[in-house]
Image (cartoon, rainbow, N blue to C red; front, side):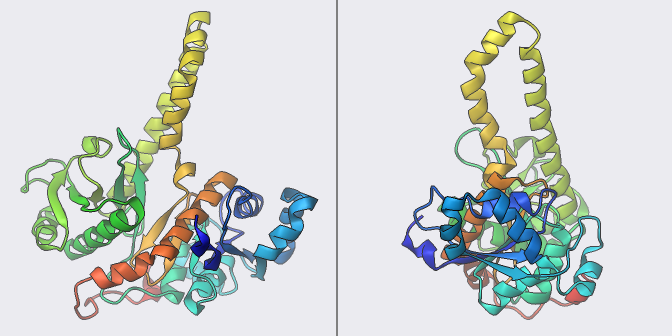
Length: 357
């Protein structure tokens, strides 16, 4: 990344995720191949972070790491099984809340967390706040495709129940993401349904269809689940319940296929030889579907760059999530979304942030 990255500071929730703090700390200092890494604020229990640094940073690199990494102490941790909004209200000194506060105050330009995703959403709403006019933020995920083009699916978990107008807002935000983060000049935006015809789908999908058609996007109509990996659209819009199931199903199918191939390759000497010949190509395919390579997903609709990483993130995933956060900060994705949202009063009937999940 260019010299501009040197001016970016990323707050990292060091206590978030199944493998924290070690994997988070290791990933946060993994820039030895990067000529202009961002400044890192590791947020969490200071003693635990110090111990992780000692375990994962060679003595020869420690001075360099200390010049680019600061520790921001936060005494509390929001656990993965806690109720998000309740935990955020009760644990104001948690690593998730403190990390988001650093973005809200301007001390950091982006935040990364592999912790409780609902708590990240709640903390961002409490501190960073929504973009004016956005009813609900959405979480997006990149799905692999048959070629280099990928599909951005949203929402994948922030909103289990939505309204038609929210799906139209997701479409606008997803279109901005595709332009700014994926480099697609004119993103094709589709609505996930059980049929391609405009009249297909639930009452929600049928009501949302004309709203997406009228939105300032390149709307291409409905898309079926079987086409999400075929590259027929750049952005696919759905509610968080359906999107999360679609994402987890795709992940599960990918893991299943690679497990079956691996097991079959061990069945005979001939199969093992074939497996060895195919291994380089299979590794390339695996890398395309590996969530660690994507790193994390932007929380779209909040007035700052918030990246939610997979709860199982290892050091590689955290390193790549920080890259996503840095790129989003450099390109001011949240600012572009704010400019793209139609000017309108605050949405009626939206619950206060304290009541959001």
